[in-house]
Image (cartoon, rainbow, N blue to C red):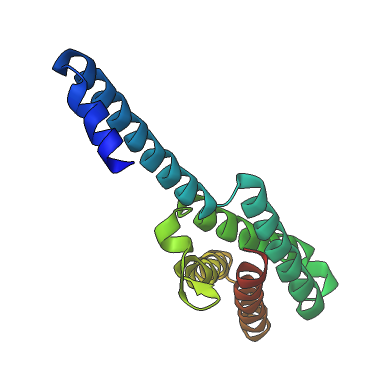
Length: 157
């Protein structure tokens, strides 16, 4: 079989062989590029998936805030839920790349660890700008929101 192929390619003139060789090279390059693109797409998440992750985090933070804050503090309760959800969404959508989504530690990616950090920063900035009267309760809520953010990021994404 190999002799037949060698004989067939040997009999081809350069004018015929050059375009065939180029076509085979292009086909091989296209196959490699498409497999690379598919691999990269498999390691990223859709905007809807990321939005769902942020929404779940926001709802859990809202529940923690409603549990720990008095009823008259409903604006703070809502703000905590919204900020926790937005922080996760903004981090995950802006850092949605295979390098950060790959699990360095089994079950945990860099994005899983960093989304809760941004939740902590957002809620700390809110507390500092708002001058909340009940700081100990807020620290409990912030801790619960950060734990919820980590759990949701690990479980849902």
